[in-house]
Length: 200
Image (tube, rainbow, N blue to C red; front, side, top):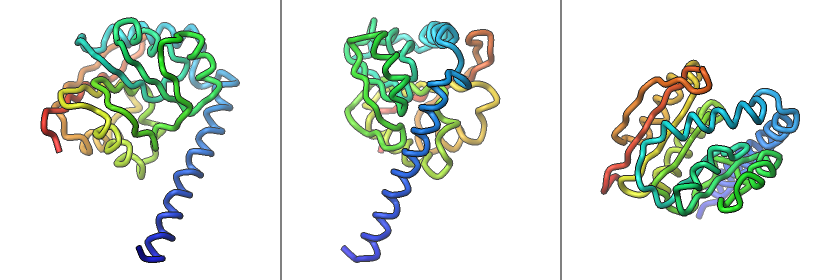
């Protein structure tokens, strides 16, 4: 292994670590102040509407990427035997862990997480916070974690969508279904991407 390659690898890892640190500080501040992401009641209402719009299927395992306060996660755990949820904010996770003891909550950032296998991966409102140069990495990680015939379900507010989601989905050439829905009175875009068996 060349010294140049090792140096470049260290720089890359430093970039990821620096990004994670800065994002973590930002999200901790936002959750502690409870500004920008809305009140707990707002999150509870959104969770109820979102779970109703997740395609019905006998899921065995699920991953909630960027679970926030965990209200959606708690509802998933009612019918899904194994649920894992991650978030970069310890403040949000402290609230989430009070909502459901059955869920495996992990303090982790979305960009670097790539553990386990799931037949449902849920992304609610996280894509706008992923920088363009990390979209490909996140897509590859999701592809590794999602089993054949598994579903990636994305919810984003209309207005936060567009080129970012299109670029994201180009990295995952799955069969996709998209439609506009209303959640808590606001327009959302729902995207369901199914991974076909034998996808490379």
